[in-house]
Image (spheres, rainbow, N blue to C red):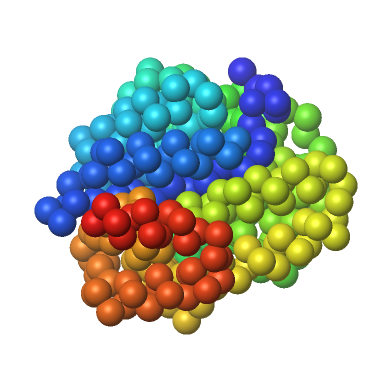
Length: 314
């Protein structure tokens, strides 16, 4: 079950495109996923960037189906199963694994404040009922709880836990995660805080999960290659550039607002409409235009995609 070579590299947490009526725009989803995969990157559907908590469960299944269709077995597809109900998470895992996803990814249930003992118990119960590769996902910005590294250490001993995605950027956290988990040959570490990507790869992390990969997957592929080549000067230059791309939709905004801004950026280059689901609010025409202008000033190489979208009414 555990085979590290299957769990590494850049895995983009995919935005979920919606129609004006709030339905998943399946053609747009496949377009976004194919564009990411064409650069040699993997995709993670039904994560935080994908507004998963707002999507009805039957619709989530349709999105995973679309991802598998778009991937055609050419690049990895990870799927989120996080839920406040254990049974729902187990059911989703069963469905997505039958569709052929690379692994399923679970964050903490977030309604109740949990002790480390309760966290360990939850993930152990999940592990015992999920019959395929499973990853632990730590994202305190949404769950309001941090999974202690000591808990992940215990979970890593279980056969179906294959990795850990950590999206917590606090001083010393990355070092603690790698120090306690980085030497495990059959357990992969993914950095979910994009600003720490180069440092994490240099330290020895196995992969990255950057939301700006929706916009500029090619730059993330270049950073990954530079790191593999040991060209840390080039990796640092790319990291700085990618930080600017992320700031375009994140700086000065809440998480929800940043997801709406990300959609506006993707709308600017014709990949999808800018709609987000309630309780988030879609950017109006003026705000979308502002994001478009900033994006094309920062990434002029995207101009061709933007002009093609304009010509076709995208």
